[in-house]
Length: 259
Length: 286
Image 1 (cartoon, chains in turn red, blue):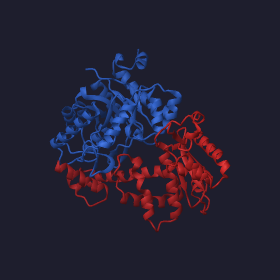
Image 2: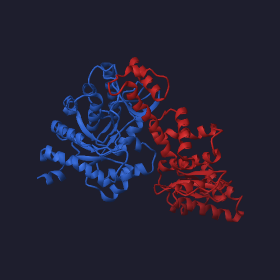
Image 3: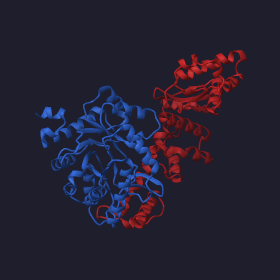
Image 4: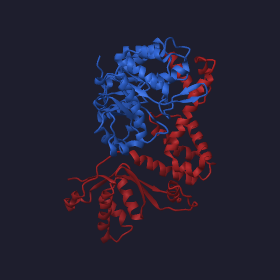
Protein backbone atom coordinates (compact mmCIF):
# COMPACT_ATOMS: atom_id res chain seq x y z
CA UNK A 1 0.00 0.00 0.00
CA UNK A 2 3.08 2.26 -0.02
CA UNK A 3 2.30 3.47 -3.54
CA UNK A 4 -1.35 4.18 -2.78
CA UNK A 5 -0.40 6.00 0.41
CA UNK A 6 2.20 8.17 -1.35
CA UNK A 7 -0.36 8.99 -4.04
CA UNK A 8 -2.99 9.95 -1.45
CA UNK A 9 -0.49 12.15 0.40
CA UNK A 10 0.47 13.89 -2.84
CA UNK A 11 -3.22 14.39 -3.74
CA UNK A 12 -3.95 15.85 -0.30
CA UNK A 13 -0.89 18.11 -0.59
CA UNK A 14 -2.36 19.42 -3.84
CA UNK A 15 -5.70 20.15 -2.15
CA UNK A 16 -3.95 21.97 0.68
CA UNK A 17 -2.05 24.12 -1.82
CA UNK A 18 1.34 22.60 -0.97
CA UNK A 19 3.99 21.57 -3.51
CA UNK A 20 2.86 18.22 -4.93
CA UNK A 21 3.83 15.91 -7.78
CA UNK A 22 0.35 14.38 -8.08
CA UNK A 23 -0.15 15.73 -11.64
CA UNK A 24 2.45 13.21 -12.86
CA UNK A 25 0.18 10.38 -11.67
CA UNK A 26 -2.86 11.65 -13.61
CA UNK A 27 -3.67 11.10 -17.28
CA UNK A 28 -4.16 14.16 -19.45
CA UNK A 29 -6.66 14.13 -22.31
CA UNK A 30 -6.90 16.53 -25.28
CA UNK A 31 -9.83 18.43 -23.75
CA UNK A 32 -8.51 18.61 -20.19
CA UNK A 33 -4.94 18.16 -18.97
CA UNK A 34 -4.02 16.75 -15.55
CA UNK A 35 -3.73 20.16 -13.78
CA UNK A 36 -7.18 21.20 -15.09
CA UNK A 37 -8.73 17.95 -13.88
CA UNK A 38 -6.99 18.21 -10.48
CA UNK A 39 -8.06 21.85 -10.22
CA UNK A 40 -11.70 20.73 -9.96
CA UNK A 41 -10.85 18.97 -6.70
CA UNK A 42 -8.70 21.82 -5.32
CA UNK A 43 -11.36 24.48 -5.85
CA UNK A 44 -14.05 22.13 -4.54
CA UNK A 45 -12.04 21.59 -1.35
CA UNK A 46 -11.87 25.29 -0.52
CA UNK A 47 -15.48 25.94 -1.48
CA UNK A 48 -16.74 23.17 0.76
CA UNK A 49 -14.82 24.41 3.78
CA UNK A 50 -16.00 27.97 3.14
CA UNK A 51 -19.58 26.78 2.93
CA UNK A 52 -19.16 25.11 6.33
CA UNK A 53 -17.83 28.34 7.89
CA UNK A 54 -20.56 30.43 6.24
CA UNK A 55 -23.15 28.07 7.71
CA UNK A 56 -21.61 28.41 11.18
CA UNK A 57 -21.24 32.20 11.15
CA UNK A 58 -24.02 33.90 9.15
CA UNK A 59 -24.17 37.06 11.32
CA UNK A 60 -20.41 37.40 11.64
CA UNK A 61 -20.40 37.21 7.84
CA UNK A 62 -23.12 39.91 7.66
CA UNK A 63 -21.19 42.12 10.12
CA UNK A 64 -17.87 41.88 8.28
CA UNK A 65 -19.24 41.86 4.72
CA UNK A 66 -18.18 39.44 1.98
CA UNK A 67 -14.63 40.69 1.49
CA UNK A 68 -13.46 40.68 5.12
CA UNK A 69 -15.27 37.46 5.95
CA UNK A 70 -13.64 35.84 2.94
CA UNK A 71 -10.23 37.00 4.22
CA UNK A 72 -11.03 35.46 7.57
CA UNK A 73 -12.12 32.18 5.97
CA UNK A 74 -8.97 32.04 3.84
CA UNK A 75 -6.82 32.57 6.93
CA UNK A 76 -8.74 29.84 8.73
CA UNK A 77 -8.55 27.30 5.91
CA UNK A 78 -4.81 27.94 5.40
CA UNK A 79 -4.11 27.43 9.08
CA UNK A 80 -6.53 24.62 9.95
CA UNK A 81 -6.80 21.63 7.64
CA UNK A 82 -9.77 19.53 8.73
CA UNK A 83 -9.15 16.69 11.18
CA UNK A 84 -12.83 15.99 11.87
CA UNK A 85 -15.18 13.65 9.99
CA UNK A 86 -18.13 16.04 10.02
CA UNK A 87 -18.07 19.58 8.59
CA UNK A 88 -20.28 20.50 11.54
CA UNK A 89 -17.10 20.55 13.66
CA UNK A 90 -14.75 22.14 11.14
CA UNK A 91 -14.99 25.69 12.54
CA UNK A 92 -14.06 24.69 16.09
CA UNK A 93 -10.68 26.50 16.01
CA UNK A 94 -12.18 29.90 15.14
CA UNK A 95 -11.71 31.34 18.67
CA UNK A 96 -8.05 30.32 18.54
CA UNK A 97 -7.60 32.02 15.15
CA UNK A 98 -9.31 35.22 16.36
CA UNK A 99 -7.30 35.27 19.60
CA UNK A 100 -4.12 35.14 17.54
CA UNK A 101 -5.08 38.01 15.23
CA UNK A 102 -4.06 41.56 16.14
CA UNK A 103 -4.59 43.60 12.99
CA UNK A 104 -8.08 42.54 11.91
CA UNK A 105 -10.87 45.18 11.94
CA UNK A 106 -13.29 45.40 14.89
CA UNK A 107 -11.67 42.47 16.68
CA UNK A 108 -13.41 42.85 20.08
CA UNK A 109 -16.86 42.79 18.45
CA UNK A 110 -15.83 40.04 16.01
CA UNK A 111 -14.65 37.82 18.87
CA UNK A 112 -17.90 38.29 20.76
CA UNK A 113 -20.10 37.68 17.70
CA UNK A 114 -18.12 34.48 17.11
CA UNK A 115 -18.85 33.31 20.67
CA UNK A 116 -22.55 34.07 20.26
CA UNK A 117 -22.86 32.11 17.02
CA UNK A 118 -20.79 29.24 18.39
CA UNK A 119 -23.15 29.05 21.39
CA UNK A 120 -26.17 28.94 19.07
CA UNK A 121 -24.57 26.19 16.98
CA UNK A 122 -23.88 24.25 20.17
CA UNK A 123 -27.42 24.66 21.44
CA UNK A 124 -28.91 23.45 18.14
CA UNK A 125 -27.89 19.82 18.57
CA UNK A 126 -26.64 19.55 22.16
CA UNK A 127 -27.66 16.34 23.95
CA UNK A 128 -31.36 15.83 24.69
CA UNK A 129 -32.78 15.37 28.16
CA UNK A 130 -36.33 15.31 29.46
CA UNK A 131 -37.06 18.22 31.86
CA UNK A 132 -37.58 17.10 35.47
CA UNK A 133 -41.13 16.87 36.78
CA UNK A 134 -41.93 20.03 38.82
CA UNK A 135 -44.11 17.87 41.12
CA UNK A 136 -40.97 16.26 42.54
CA UNK A 137 -40.11 19.54 44.29
CA UNK A 138 -43.29 19.46 46.38
CA UNK A 139 -42.51 15.90 47.46
CA UNK A 140 -38.97 16.75 48.54
CA UNK A 141 -38.45 16.76 52.34
CA UNK A 142 -36.93 20.01 53.72
CA UNK A 143 -33.63 18.31 54.63
CA UNK A 144 -33.05 17.29 50.97
CA UNK A 145 -33.11 20.85 49.61
CA UNK A 146 -29.67 22.22 50.60
CA UNK A 147 -27.69 19.40 48.96
CA UNK A 148 -29.86 19.29 45.84
CA UNK A 149 -27.81 19.45 42.61
CA UNK A 150 -29.24 21.20 39.56
CA UNK A 151 -27.94 19.74 36.29
CA UNK A 152 -28.44 22.22 33.49
CA UNK A 153 -29.47 21.18 30.01
CA UNK A 154 -26.46 20.60 27.72
CA UNK A 155 -27.57 23.50 25.48
CA UNK A 156 -27.32 26.15 28.25
CA UNK A 157 -24.59 28.76 27.70
CA UNK A 158 -24.19 32.02 29.66
CA UNK A 159 -22.21 34.69 27.83
CA UNK A 160 -20.54 37.62 29.53
CA UNK A 161 -19.64 40.15 26.89
CA UNK A 162 -17.88 43.43 27.19
CA UNK A 163 -19.57 45.04 24.21
CA UNK A 164 -23.14 45.28 22.93
CA UNK A 165 -22.49 42.28 20.72
CA UNK A 166 -25.86 40.70 21.47
CA UNK A 167 -27.90 43.71 20.28
CA UNK A 168 -25.56 43.81 17.26
CA UNK A 169 -26.14 40.08 16.60
CA UNK A 170 -29.90 40.50 17.04
CA UNK A 171 -30.08 43.41 14.58
CA UNK A 172 -28.01 41.48 12.02
CA UNK A 173 -30.15 38.37 12.37
CA UNK A 174 -33.24 40.50 11.63
CA UNK A 175 -31.57 42.08 8.61
CA UNK A 176 -31.41 45.46 10.38
CA UNK A 177 -28.51 47.91 10.63
CA UNK A 178 -26.57 47.01 13.79
CA UNK A 179 -26.11 49.64 16.53
CA UNK A 180 -22.73 51.32 16.96
CA UNK A 181 -20.39 49.40 19.31
CA UNK A 182 -20.67 50.53 22.94
CA UNK A 183 -19.59 48.89 26.17
CA UNK A 184 -22.39 46.72 27.56
CA UNK A 185 -21.68 44.00 30.09
CA UNK A 186 -25.20 42.57 30.48
CA UNK A 187 -25.02 38.75 30.57
CA UNK A 188 -27.03 36.74 28.03
CA UNK A 189 -28.39 33.23 28.07
CA UNK A 190 -28.59 30.87 25.09
CA UNK A 191 -30.39 27.54 25.36
CA UNK A 192 -32.80 25.27 23.53
CA UNK A 193 -36.48 24.84 24.32
CA UNK A 194 -38.92 22.70 22.31
CA UNK A 195 -36.09 22.02 19.81
CA UNK A 196 -35.59 25.73 19.06
CA UNK A 197 -32.56 27.76 20.19
CA UNK A 198 -33.56 30.73 22.36
CA UNK A 199 -31.85 33.68 23.97
CA UNK A 200 -32.63 36.30 26.59
CA UNK A 201 -30.83 38.88 28.69
CA UNK A 202 -30.12 37.82 32.27
CA UNK A 203 -30.54 39.89 35.41
CA UNK A 204 -27.45 39.76 37.62
CA UNK A 205 -29.02 37.47 40.31
CA UNK A 206 -30.08 34.83 37.79
CA UNK A 207 -26.69 35.01 36.07
CA UNK A 208 -24.96 34.41 39.43
CA UNK A 209 -27.30 31.51 40.24
CA UNK A 210 -26.74 29.95 36.83
CA UNK A 211 -22.99 30.22 37.28
CA UNK A 212 -23.22 28.46 40.59
CA UNK A 213 -25.28 25.64 39.08
CA UNK A 214 -23.05 25.38 36.00
CA UNK A 215 -20.02 25.04 38.29
CA UNK A 216 -21.62 22.17 40.22
CA UNK A 217 -22.76 24.17 43.26
CA UNK A 218 -25.73 22.73 45.18
CA UNK A 219 -28.93 24.53 46.12
CA UNK A 220 -27.42 26.00 49.30
CA UNK A 221 -24.51 27.42 47.26
CA UNK A 222 -27.03 28.88 44.85
CA UNK A 223 -28.86 30.56 47.75
CA UNK A 224 -25.56 31.88 49.03
CA UNK A 225 -24.88 33.44 45.61
CA UNK A 226 -28.29 35.14 45.76
CA UNK A 227 -27.46 36.73 49.15
CA UNK A 228 -25.44 39.33 47.25
CA UNK A 229 -28.68 40.57 45.66
CA UNK A 230 -31.55 39.89 48.07
CA UNK A 231 -32.20 40.16 51.83
CA UNK A 232 -31.62 36.79 53.53
CA UNK A 233 -35.31 36.19 54.27
CA UNK A 234 -36.23 36.62 50.60
CA UNK A 235 -33.50 34.37 49.21
CA UNK A 236 -35.32 30.98 49.51
CA UNK A 237 -38.38 32.35 47.68
CA UNK A 238 -36.20 33.89 44.95
CA UNK A 239 -34.22 30.65 44.58
CA UNK A 240 -37.36 28.50 44.27
CA UNK A 241 -38.80 30.95 41.77
CA UNK A 242 -35.65 30.65 39.61
CA UNK A 243 -35.80 26.90 39.89
CA UNK A 244 -39.39 26.86 38.66
CA UNK A 245 -38.51 29.16 35.76
CA UNK A 246 -35.63 26.89 34.75
CA UNK A 247 -37.88 23.84 34.80
CA UNK A 248 -40.60 25.55 32.76
CA UNK A 249 -38.05 26.89 30.31
CA UNK A 250 -36.50 23.42 29.83
CA UNK A 251 -33.15 24.70 31.08
CA UNK A 252 -32.72 21.81 33.52
CA UNK A 253 -31.74 18.27 32.60
CA UNK A 254 -32.04 16.79 36.06
CA UNK A 255 -32.42 17.50 39.76
CA UNK A 256 -30.27 15.17 41.82
CA UNK A 257 -30.88 14.61 45.53
CA UNK A 258 -29.34 12.23 48.07
CA UNK A 259 -32.69 10.58 48.58
CA UNK B 1 -33.20 -13.52 -8.02
CA UNK B 2 -35.12 -11.53 -5.42
CA UNK B 3 -33.77 -8.44 -3.81
CA UNK B 4 -35.65 -6.22 -1.37
CA UNK B 5 -37.34 -3.48 -3.38
CA UNK B 6 -38.32 -0.40 -1.39
CA UNK B 7 -39.86 1.42 -4.35
CA UNK B 8 -39.22 5.14 -4.92
CA UNK B 9 -37.68 7.49 -2.39
CA UNK B 10 -36.01 10.84 -1.83
CA UNK B 11 -33.06 12.12 0.16
CA UNK B 12 -34.35 13.52 3.44
CA UNK B 13 -33.37 17.20 3.68
CA UNK B 14 -33.87 19.65 6.56
CA UNK B 15 -35.82 22.05 4.29
CA UNK B 16 -38.53 19.39 3.92
CA UNK B 17 -38.95 18.13 7.52
CA UNK B 18 -42.04 20.19 8.20
CA UNK B 19 -43.71 19.45 4.89
CA UNK B 20 -43.20 15.71 5.31
CA UNK B 21 -44.52 15.71 8.87
CA UNK B 22 -47.53 17.84 7.94
CA UNK B 23 -48.48 16.08 4.68
CA UNK B 24 -47.11 12.53 4.96
CA UNK B 25 -46.43 12.46 1.18
CA UNK B 26 -47.02 9.25 -0.76
CA UNK B 27 -43.46 8.14 -1.32
CA UNK B 28 -42.02 4.81 -0.32
CA UNK B 29 -38.88 5.63 1.66
CA UNK B 30 -36.22 8.20 2.57
CA UNK B 31 -32.45 8.13 2.49
CA UNK B 32 -30.74 10.02 5.32
CA UNK B 33 -27.21 11.43 5.24
CA UNK B 34 -25.70 9.55 8.17
CA UNK B 35 -23.33 12.31 9.31
CA UNK B 36 -26.22 14.81 9.72
CA UNK B 37 -27.67 12.61 12.45
CA UNK B 38 -24.45 11.63 14.21
CA UNK B 39 -25.06 14.45 16.70
CA UNK B 40 -25.84 14.46 20.44
CA UNK B 41 -29.49 15.60 20.15
CA UNK B 42 -31.85 18.37 19.05
CA UNK B 43 -33.84 18.86 15.88
CA UNK B 44 -32.12 16.43 13.48
CA UNK B 45 -32.70 13.38 15.69
CA UNK B 46 -36.21 14.50 16.71
CA UNK B 47 -37.29 14.86 13.07
CA UNK B 48 -35.63 11.59 12.13
CA UNK B 49 -37.58 9.81 14.83
CA UNK B 50 -40.91 11.24 13.65
CA UNK B 51 -40.28 10.53 9.99
CA UNK B 52 -38.84 7.08 10.71
CA UNK B 53 -42.13 6.18 12.40
CA UNK B 54 -43.90 6.56 9.03
CA UNK B 55 -41.31 5.59 6.41
CA UNK B 56 -38.54 3.05 5.88
CA UNK B 57 -35.13 4.74 5.79
CA UNK B 58 -31.71 3.84 4.49
CA UNK B 59 -28.48 5.46 5.72
CA UNK B 60 -25.97 6.99 3.32
CA UNK B 61 -22.57 8.15 4.58
CA UNK B 62 -19.72 10.20 3.16
CA UNK B 63 -16.97 9.75 5.76
CA UNK B 64 -16.14 6.04 5.87
CA UNK B 65 -13.09 6.68 3.65
CA UNK B 66 -12.98 3.02 2.76
CA UNK B 67 -10.17 3.56 0.23
CA UNK B 68 -7.87 5.48 2.58
CA UNK B 69 -4.51 4.15 3.69
CA UNK B 70 -5.19 5.56 7.17
CA UNK B 71 -6.56 3.02 9.65
CA UNK B 72 -10.36 2.84 9.78
CA UNK B 73 -11.73 5.55 12.07
CA UNK B 74 -13.03 3.62 15.08
CA UNK B 75 -14.87 6.61 16.54
CA UNK B 76 -16.67 7.15 13.27
CA UNK B 77 -17.62 3.49 13.02
CA UNK B 78 -18.91 3.45 16.60
CA UNK B 79 -20.99 6.54 15.91
CA UNK B 80 -22.32 4.98 12.69
CA UNK B 81 -23.28 1.81 14.53
CA UNK B 82 -25.08 3.80 17.24
CA UNK B 83 -27.06 5.68 14.61
CA UNK B 84 -27.92 2.43 12.80
CA UNK B 85 -29.23 0.98 16.06
CA UNK B 86 -31.37 4.06 16.52
CA UNK B 87 -32.62 4.53 12.93
CA UNK B 88 -32.99 0.82 12.10
CA UNK B 89 -32.26 1.42 8.40
CA UNK B 90 -33.09 -1.11 5.70
CA UNK B 91 -29.41 -0.85 4.76
CA UNK B 92 -26.49 1.55 4.84
CA UNK B 93 -24.09 2.74 2.20
CA UNK B 94 -20.97 4.82 1.57
CA UNK B 95 -18.73 5.52 -1.41
CA UNK B 96 -15.97 3.69 -3.22
CA UNK B 97 -13.47 6.44 -2.52
CA UNK B 98 -11.04 7.87 -0.03
CA UNK B 99 -11.67 11.10 1.85
CA UNK B 100 -8.73 11.45 4.23
CA UNK B 101 -5.07 10.65 4.68
CA UNK B 102 -2.75 11.41 7.61
CA UNK B 103 -5.97 12.22 9.51
CA UNK B 104 -6.57 15.22 7.27
CA UNK B 105 -10.05 15.21 5.77
CA UNK B 106 -10.72 16.54 2.28
CA UNK B 107 -14.50 16.33 2.85
CA UNK B 108 -14.62 15.15 -0.76
CA UNK B 109 -15.12 11.77 -2.40
CA UNK B 110 -11.72 11.23 -4.00
CA UNK B 111 -11.13 8.58 -6.67
CA UNK B 112 -8.82 5.59 -6.48
CA UNK B 113 -6.48 3.88 -8.93
CA UNK B 114 -8.20 0.80 -10.36
CA UNK B 115 -5.67 -1.97 -9.79
CA UNK B 116 -5.18 -5.23 -7.93
CA UNK B 117 -3.42 -3.90 -4.79
CA UNK B 118 -6.18 -1.33 -4.30
CA UNK B 119 -8.89 -3.99 -4.73
CA UNK B 120 -7.24 -6.19 -2.10
CA UNK B 121 -6.80 -3.27 0.29
CA UNK B 122 -10.41 -2.08 0.02
CA UNK B 123 -12.07 -5.51 0.00
CA UNK B 124 -10.32 -6.27 3.30
CA UNK B 125 -11.49 -3.00 4.85
CA UNK B 126 -15.09 -3.51 3.72
CA UNK B 127 -15.04 -6.96 5.33
CA UNK B 128 -13.76 -5.35 8.55
CA UNK B 129 -16.56 -2.77 8.48
CA UNK B 130 -19.21 -5.39 7.76
CA UNK B 131 -17.92 -7.57 10.61
CA UNK B 132 -18.05 -4.59 12.97
CA UNK B 133 -21.54 -3.49 11.91
CA UNK B 134 -22.82 -7.04 11.69
CA UNK B 135 -24.36 -6.48 8.25
CA UNK B 136 -23.51 -6.10 4.57
CA UNK B 137 -22.99 -2.54 3.35
CA UNK B 138 -23.54 -0.95 -0.07
CA UNK B 139 -20.70 0.72 -1.89
CA UNK B 140 -21.46 3.50 -4.39
CA UNK B 141 -19.66 4.50 -7.59
CA UNK B 142 -18.42 8.11 -7.81
CA UNK B 143 -18.41 10.87 -10.33
CA UNK B 144 -14.74 11.44 -11.06
CA UNK B 145 -12.62 13.94 -12.93
CA UNK B 146 -9.21 12.21 -13.02
CA UNK B 147 -7.86 8.87 -14.22
CA UNK B 148 -4.69 7.57 -12.58
CA UNK B 149 -1.86 6.29 -14.73
CA UNK B 150 -1.67 3.41 -12.24
CA UNK B 151 -5.17 2.18 -13.20
CA UNK B 152 -5.17 -1.20 -14.93
CA UNK B 153 -8.88 -1.86 -15.47
CA UNK B 154 -12.22 -0.16 -15.97
CA UNK B 155 -14.08 1.36 -13.05
CA UNK B 156 -16.89 -1.21 -13.31
CA UNK B 157 -14.43 -4.12 -13.23
CA UNK B 158 -12.85 -2.55 -10.15
CA UNK B 159 -16.20 -2.01 -8.40
CA UNK B 160 -17.53 -5.44 -9.26
CA UNK B 161 -14.38 -7.27 -8.16
CA UNK B 162 -14.30 -5.41 -4.82
CA UNK B 163 -17.97 -6.23 -4.22
CA UNK B 164 -17.30 -9.90 -5.03
CA UNK B 165 -14.25 -10.20 -2.78
CA UNK B 166 -15.77 -8.23 0.11
CA UNK B 167 -19.18 -9.84 -0.40
CA UNK B 168 -20.79 -6.41 -0.18
CA UNK B 169 -23.65 -4.86 -2.15
CA UNK B 170 -23.67 -2.04 -4.68
CA UNK B 171 -25.40 1.31 -4.82
CA UNK B 172 -25.31 2.29 -8.46
CA UNK B 173 -25.46 6.02 -9.07
CA UNK B 174 -26.85 6.41 -12.57
CA UNK B 175 -25.91 10.09 -12.79
CA UNK B 176 -22.36 9.33 -11.66
CA UNK B 177 -22.03 6.71 -14.41
CA UNK B 178 -23.22 9.30 -16.92
CA UNK B 179 -20.88 12.03 -15.60
CA UNK B 180 -17.82 9.76 -15.45
CA UNK B 181 -18.60 8.26 -18.89
CA UNK B 182 -18.52 11.81 -20.30
CA UNK B 183 -15.36 12.81 -18.39
CA UNK B 184 -13.45 9.60 -19.20
CA UNK B 185 -14.89 8.65 -22.59
CA UNK B 186 -16.49 5.29 -21.90
CA UNK B 187 -19.87 3.89 -22.88
CA UNK B 188 -22.21 4.01 -19.86
CA UNK B 189 -23.91 0.82 -21.12
CA UNK B 190 -20.61 -1.03 -20.69
CA UNK B 191 -20.73 0.02 -17.04
CA UNK B 192 -24.28 -1.26 -16.52
CA UNK B 193 -23.50 -4.55 -18.23
CA UNK B 194 -20.25 -4.95 -16.30
CA UNK B 195 -21.77 -5.00 -12.81
CA UNK B 196 -23.16 -8.18 -11.21
CA UNK B 197 -26.95 -7.65 -11.08
CA UNK B 198 -27.40 -9.68 -7.92
CA UNK B 199 -25.29 -7.20 -5.94
CA UNK B 200 -27.10 -4.02 -7.05
CA UNK B 201 -29.45 -2.99 -4.25
CA UNK B 202 -30.12 0.71 -4.87
CA UNK B 203 -30.01 3.40 -7.59
CA UNK B 204 -29.21 7.07 -7.11
CA UNK B 205 -30.42 9.70 -9.53
CA UNK B 206 -29.25 13.33 -9.48
CA UNK B 207 -28.49 16.38 -11.58
CA UNK B 208 -25.09 17.66 -12.64
CA UNK B 209 -23.48 20.82 -14.09
CA UNK B 210 -21.19 21.65 -16.98
CA UNK B 211 -17.76 23.16 -16.37
CA UNK B 212 -15.89 23.65 -19.63
CA UNK B 213 -15.35 20.23 -21.18
CA UNK B 214 -16.16 18.41 -17.93
CA UNK B 215 -19.38 17.42 -16.21
CA UNK B 216 -19.47 18.02 -12.45
CA UNK B 217 -21.63 16.09 -10.01
CA UNK B 218 -23.28 19.03 -8.23
CA UNK B 219 -26.73 17.70 -7.24
CA UNK B 220 -28.13 21.18 -7.86
CA UNK B 221 -30.22 20.54 -10.98
CA UNK B 222 -33.08 18.23 -11.92
CA UNK B 223 -32.12 14.88 -13.45
CA UNK B 224 -31.43 15.46 -17.16
CA UNK B 225 -32.98 13.53 -20.05
CA UNK B 226 -29.94 11.40 -20.97
CA UNK B 227 -29.71 10.26 -17.33
CA UNK B 228 -33.41 9.29 -17.43
CA UNK B 229 -32.67 7.29 -20.58
CA UNK B 230 -29.79 5.55 -18.84
CA UNK B 231 -32.03 4.88 -15.83
CA UNK B 232 -34.56 3.19 -18.12
CA UNK B 233 -31.80 1.01 -19.55
CA UNK B 234 -30.64 0.18 -16.02
CA UNK B 235 -34.16 -0.87 -14.96
CA UNK B 236 -34.48 -3.06 -18.05
CA UNK B 237 -31.17 -4.71 -17.27
CA UNK B 238 -31.38 -5.05 -13.48
CA UNK B 239 -35.15 -5.26 -12.90
CA UNK B 240 -36.73 -3.53 -9.91
CA UNK B 241 -34.08 -1.67 -7.88
CA UNK B 242 -34.94 0.79 -5.08
CA UNK B 243 -34.57 4.23 -6.62
CA UNK B 244 -34.17 7.70 -5.15
CA UNK B 245 -33.28 11.25 -6.17
CA UNK B 246 -30.49 13.13 -4.40
CA UNK B 247 -30.75 16.90 -4.26
CA UNK B 248 -28.22 18.83 -2.15
CA UNK B 249 -28.17 22.38 -3.51
CA UNK B 250 -30.79 24.80 -4.86
CA UNK B 251 -33.25 22.46 -3.18
CA UNK B 252 -36.79 23.04 -4.50
CA UNK B 253 -40.02 22.76 -2.50
CA UNK B 254 -40.93 19.19 -1.67
CA UNK B 255 -43.79 18.91 -4.24
CA UNK B 256 -41.37 19.79 -7.06
CA UNK B 257 -39.00 16.98 -6.03
CA UNK B 258 -41.96 14.65 -5.64
CA UNK B 259 -43.00 15.48 -9.20
CA UNK B 260 -39.48 14.67 -10.39
CA UNK B 261 -39.65 11.32 -8.63
CA UNK B 262 -42.89 10.63 -10.52
CA UNK B 263 -40.79 10.60 -13.71
CA UNK B 264 -38.84 7.65 -12.28
CA UNK B 265 -42.12 5.97 -11.36
CA UNK B 266 -43.46 6.49 -14.90
CA UNK B 267 -40.31 4.99 -16.39
CA UNK B 268 -40.57 2.02 -14.05
CA UNK B 269 -44.29 1.72 -14.86
CA UNK B 270 -43.57 1.20 -18.54
CA UNK B 271 -40.35 -0.80 -18.03
CA UNK B 272 -41.19 -3.24 -15.25
CA UNK B 273 -43.97 -5.80 -14.96
CA UNK B 274 -46.88 -4.52 -12.83
CA UNK B 275 -46.25 -7.14 -10.15
CA UNK B 276 -42.75 -5.68 -9.62
CA UNK B 277 -44.10 -2.22 -8.74
CA UNK B 278 -45.08 -0.99 -5.26
CA UNK B 279 -48.82 -1.65 -4.70
CA UNK B 280 -49.79 2.05 -5.00
CA UNK B 281 -48.25 2.15 -8.54
CA UNK B 282 -49.26 -1.34 -9.61
CA UNK B 283 -52.92 -0.46 -9.06
CA UNK B 284 -52.53 2.63 -11.25
CA UNK B 285 -50.76 0.59 -13.95
CA UNK B 286 -53.49 -2.07 -13.96
